[in-house]
Image (tube, rainbow, N blue to C red):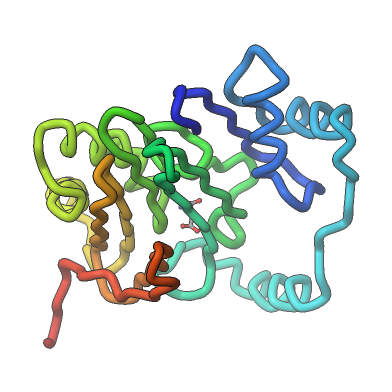
Length: 229
Ligand code: ASP
């Protein structure tokens, strides 16, 4: 998503190594904003992306191990998900963002998380700020998380306050639905037009990287659930 609110996304796209580049091609080379499944694959091939077998031996081994129990319960904070979200303010003061993921491990075929859904896993408004999310996509979609974070910044909240309020909403809805907070993890990062940034998550274990004139810094995000601390 760029500073002009151009957007592009793909979901359920298999056999393509860099789906984020296909998402950019959707944005730049089609009149649409979101392609999924076979249509997304056909579009990627038509754009010259090679079809590849992306299954590596280690993943196949782990999957076969998982098949023994086939226990389908996405767990918070283990290495079963991998979203990379980036939000940026360039030297002209323009905001943009992108995110990419293979989603939760062993998910149901056809499951779509938050990352490709503009407003849920990513949102940019060049007048206000940008936000992106990681963690359990279902919880992020439930509150249209990143759009919420940007709208909270529009109302005058700092990026940190906006991330905290979005997480608070997830916490309220999790309790309302009688689900356990320990079972979920969601993290947001946000950046405003002045270059201020913030991050917050449900529980410990979320780091984000900041790059500016002073170099690169890896930061532990603050979190809500401080059990036993
Ligand atoms: N948010 C992603 C999803 O739900 C998972 C992740 O953060 O890696 O698909």
